[in-house]
Image (tube, rainbow, N blue to C red; front, side, top):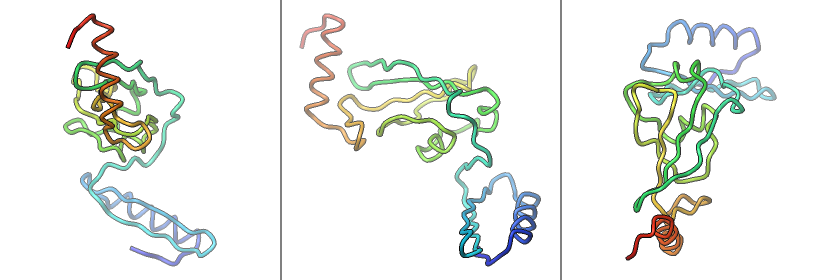
Length: 153
């Protein structure tokens, strides 16, 4: 939807959307104050209405196996209560709640006893700026991993 509006109408439109939205639909809202225009689009991806302070999000050190590097991210429990419980978050979703990390990370599992802890992985050798696997970075990362554990090969 695209509306040309003033501040009073904007509040009315937002109030109606919040009251009438179903649990499966969320709305992305953008506005231009200089043009007095509001754009509201409906989509099915999770979009939080409020943003928690990213300073309360904790990040683990990275750890690895022969295929991937991993890390976990600990969210404030009140923020975790607002997240979907039965599916993984897309990159846009976890970034939108304030998780900040380099490119290539994937939310890969839900630890049901502690849903406020998000589990992430990415392939060894992932370039943190592009998110793509670089074969030379992968070779070096695998050598480092094997060196840490005295493995040959």
